Length: 98
Image (cartoon, rainbow, N blue to C red):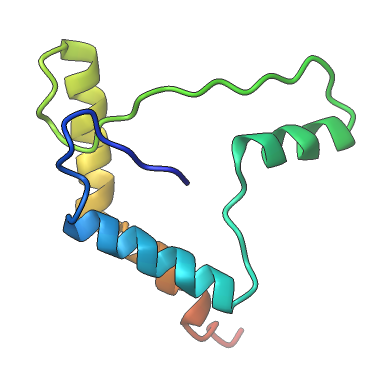
């Protein structure tokens, strides 16, 4: 996962610290977030053809002026507020007994 910012506000932010810590934890656990290129290879290995990767901007809040980007940012903001912190700790939690 690569995160950047058009206006420089990501650098030094709590989100940057969280993402850096998340990547360190993944390294310790010998895990990796799949990149677009990795996902492309997984799909091709499964027999899909004509697989392409597209990079796009994804806002993380409601700040964009463009109505479509604003809506996407609002959705991502809710994802962040309601459970983004779960992803790095999910594998550390014990599984329930069945």
